[in-house]
Amino acid sequence: MKSKVTAGILAILLGGIGAHKFYLGKPGMGILYLVFCWAIIPSIIGIIEGVLYLTKTEQEFQNKYVTA
Image (tube, rainbow, N blue to C red; front, side, top):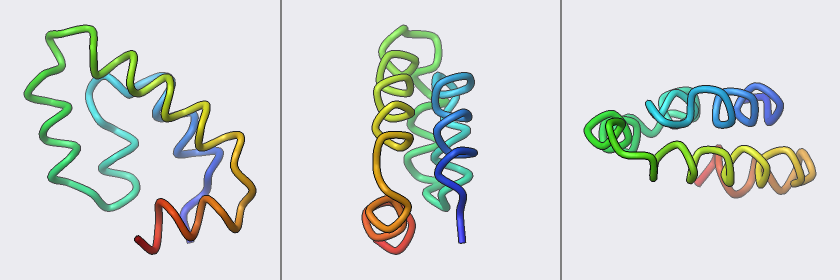
């Protein structure tokens, strides 16, 4: 079971390099973030995703991001 707090913090702090995607078991998306890490867009998306992760309930987070 993946922690939404860990995923949220990784997304906010290291979202530009896709650390949260690797943590959630989505290496393809993680590599995509790495390829575009030179641009600011993955960092912005990472912050947004981190906030979304942290505002979801534990059950919603597990259903949407972990088991999907």
